[in-house]
Each structure stands twice: as C-alpha cells, then as structure tokens.
Image 1 (tube, helix red, strand yellow):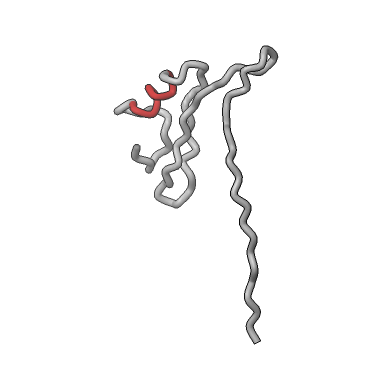
Image 2 (cartoon, one colour):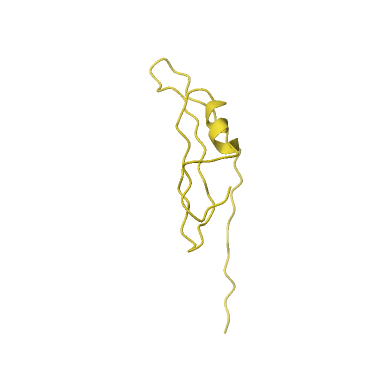
Length: 74
C-alpha cells in the first residue's frame, strides 16, 4: 500500500535591506569564485572586501587574475 505524502506550503513576502542603524557595522561587498577546479574542488578564491561596491568588481573582471588556483579559468 502506498501513502500519499502531504505537504503544506506557506508563502510569505520578505524584505531584505541593509542595517542602517547608527550602531550597525558598515556594509561590505565581495565576489567569490564558484568555479570548480579540474579535480572538482571548489575554487574558493575571493575578492578583497570593500565598502565600495565597485572595488570588488575590479577583481571579478580583471582579465589577468593572479589569485586563482591552477586549473581554474575565469
């Protein structure tokens, strides 16, 4: 005999926003490499964190990355 699994879904509207309170830490931005190396390990390279969102983009779009492991192409 097969039983039917019942599921209940609750749909909720969420809003994400930066913490702008006076005592909040500064918002920082960074990029992370999600590519896999030749042996299927995660690349795990990350850009330097910055309060300026454009600075990590330099790392992400640099045509000659120096900080990637061997076997990972961007």
